[in-house]
Image (cartoon, rainbow, N blue to C red):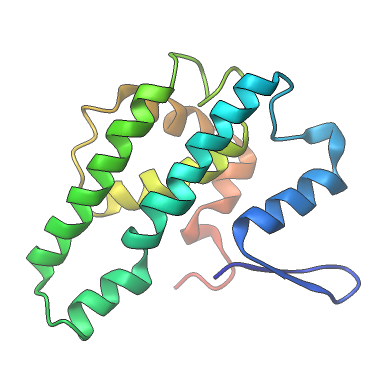
Length: 158
């Protein structure tokens, strides 16, 4: 679970709470959309990732499948690919052909999407059916903030 320690020694857990806090702290670099309908559409996209895709495709669940349920590696990949493809099919329908998920600037949607695509590629999911998702992924990965956020660029990366 992600956790943020503030400058004052306070802790915040969970991505949504952390991102909301950072968005309020830095209002000039908001990740939200100004149009209420587009903002709600983007929130729907984010919620699909946070509530439907991530909980069943995260490492904790995948490890449980292999360690506790004794599912073999191939069966685990079948599980993962099944759920990520279903989720990505739904997400793809919500996107227009723009530089990022919801326009020409990264938004909260991109912040939530990019780690899921990273993992899908790591688990060799065929992404050819998701051109809008891959477009956002490729564009985000040209930005310094996304490059610095990659797992292999973290201090605790092995």
